[in-house]
Length: 172
Image (tube, rainbow, N blue to C red; front, side, top):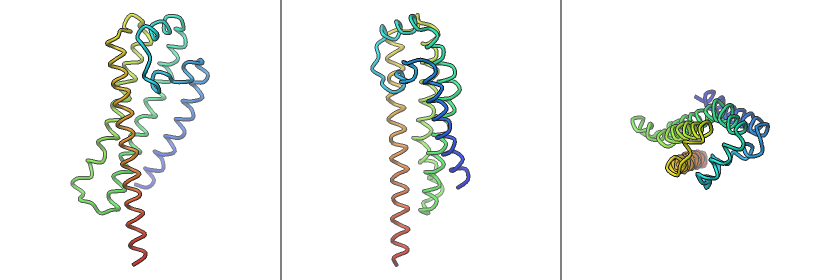
C-alpha cells in the first residue's frame, strides 16, 4: 500500500504541475482557473467571456478540465482515500469501518468531475449560461472544496494520531 500511496502522491504533483503549465499557455483567464477557484462569477459575465474569448473557453475545457483536471481530481481523491485507510489500518481500527474514511475523498472526486462536466458544457454553448446553470456549477464547486478540505483534514488528523501513538509506544 505504501507504493500505491507514493505513486498517487507523485501523480498528484506531476499532473498539477502539467495542468498549471498548460493553463498558463491557454490564456490569462484560463491561467487563473477562475471558474474552479473563485466561484463568484455571474452568468452574464461568464456568457460574455465565452462569447468574446471562445478559443480560451475551448482550451479551458480541453485540455485543462478534460483530461488534466479529471486526472488530477481522481488521483488526489485516490491518494486521500488510500492514505486515510492506510493510516486507519496502522491505528488498528476496526477493518469493517475503514471504508468510511473514503467518503469525503470520493465525494470530492465526484464533485470535481460533475463540476468539470457542467463547466465544459458552459464553455461550448454560451446559450446554456444562465443564472440557474451558473448557480448549479458554483454550488458543486463549493461542495467540492468542502469535501476536499474535510478529506485533507481527516488525513492530517489520522497521521497525527498515528504519530502520537507511535511516540507514546516508543516512550514506554
